[in-house]
Image 1 (cartoon, rainbow, N blue to C red):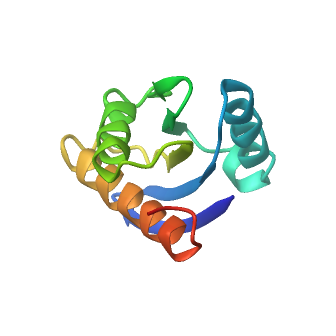
Image 2 (cartoon, rainbow, N blue to C red):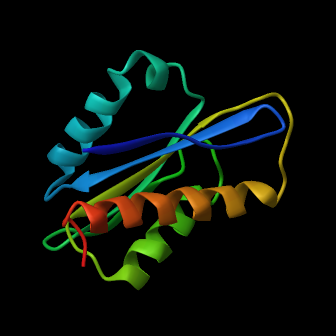
Image 3 (cartoon, one colour):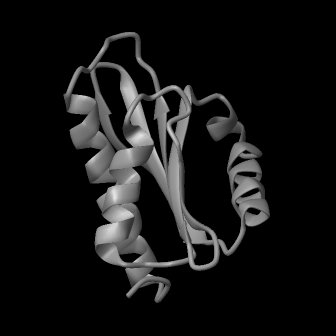
Length: 123
């Protein structure tokens, strides 16, 4: 599991990203549970994620951040990386960000994918 904390801040909201290898829905659930066991991440407002499973197809969850899972999934599909998950975590800061939140999700997903590549886990 690669965790990138405090990737960016905007109007009180904070963003982080995590990524890793998963091969089943059970491993996705375990990945998310491990992430949430970190005290800081347990207090986050949203854990939006997407995963591409070689034997299970694409999966995603917005976790209350409408459209976020689809953005992450599209980037995973474009990267062509099976059996990977990317989670974008947001701590809501009290101000609606409108469309800017999608740019932040893209930034976080790119950072997670780059970290996974650097770890030899992608591409």
